[in-house]
Amino acid sequence: MSSSSSIARIQSFAFAGIDAIPVTVEIQISSGLPAFIIVGLPDKTVGEARERVRAALAALGLALPPKRILINLVPADLPKEGSHFDLPIALAIMTAMGILSHEAVSAYAAIGELSLDGRLQATGGVLSAALEAVRARHGLICPKPQAQEARWASDTLDILAPETLRALLAHFNGDHILSPPELERVDMPPPLADLAEIRGLDLGRRALEIAACGGHSLLMTGPPGAGKSMLAQCLPSILPDLTHEQILECSRIHSLGGQASGSLLVTQPPFRAPHHSTTLPALIGGGARSRPGEVSLAHNGVLFLDELPEFSRACLESLRQPLETGTITVARAKQTVLYPSRFQFIAAMNPCRCGYLGDASRACRKAPQCGEDYLSRLSGPMLDRMDLSLFITPVSPIDMITAPPGECSALVRARVCAARARQISRQGVPNAQANATTIALSEEARSLVTEADEKLRLSARGLTRLLRASRSIADLAASDVVGAPHIREALGFRVR
Image 1 (cartoon, rainbow, N blue to C red):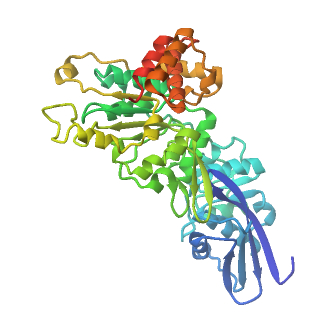
Image 2: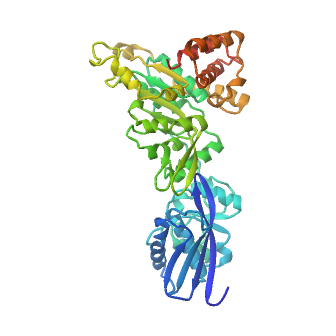
Image 3: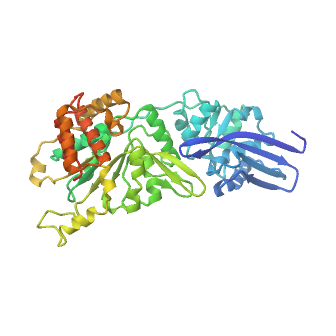
């Protein structure tokens, strides 16, 4: 280090999908005309950090030296986005000015946005940053509201979570030591909808249980008010809990999407229900910063599309890739990002535009042509990807009043969890992802499948999904082999 310039470095992160990529923030303060320059492919938000950092340092009573200040974000060919570079830039400047020691700061990576008064604001991606800090054996400096989010990465991670830049400076100077955050376990509230609230709709309840058992896609058709949406909203109440790995994966996605809230990480299967006016980037991800869309926010959970044919054709066809592969590729001019998108697809629709096809007293004058036109909005390949399909017949008002309540979600969930445990023990994944060629069939079941294939002319995908649904029905019956009754029931739920 020469007498005419000073250089300091601190670690931070950029994000590609849900992964945090290490970025070194270098600063050089040298003689020359006063300037504050940021290089290394920064976007507009990173470029504006110069004003936020200048104001935050002024709040501490510090002024930038009247010299040439050069900030370099390494590697230089990686695009840098977001306001989370504010904090590492400020710390690097204070280190270069001799206010902080290089030895103290070099042990940490930093992420956080600065207010003009020096407060640290929450920013996306803290959990991913914390996991990368653990791998690189660094500590992590992050905003106080996200200390719990960072703590989920590891119990041993050295975390500094100050509320202000002044508090962080006092910690490094030994004036007031910051206490390490402790992990607070939060009990999540139960789902709002319970199957006990649904009277009748026995076929719909059965289809929902099969779908939950194997993670299958489900299409419900029926007139308005038949109970399709209510059935879908009950699904989270009968799904198995997320594993620790799934919790971390889902929470990283929600953190990057700005959905995480403090210590309330995603500990239950997410349930996403976007409106049919949702745009393509909002559904699959993208935008100027390639943020995760609804299909990724629903990862390891449920994506529910109500009024399915009302979604744009582009949105519906974009679901093909994630339904098959469990991932979505968001390609933009500046970068291509891969997000996990392994969700359970649940859809509901009316039989026609007016909704009353088949009811002679209420159907419109265009029936039955209106029903064919409405269904034509869904492509054959899209319908072929539905494991289960059924028509929901409305419950009459008198039956709704006099019918006894059905099983509560807790009882159904117990059967689902037991069946799911058998699947994981047998093949390591839910039945919706199982290899159909390894499914054991009885001789009678094999003959029935051959007959069904000849009559229905099933595609290879349709046959695979039929066998997977049959395997889930057999698991609910605690059967090691798929029998003819299981095949028959699965055939009853196939799209005609």
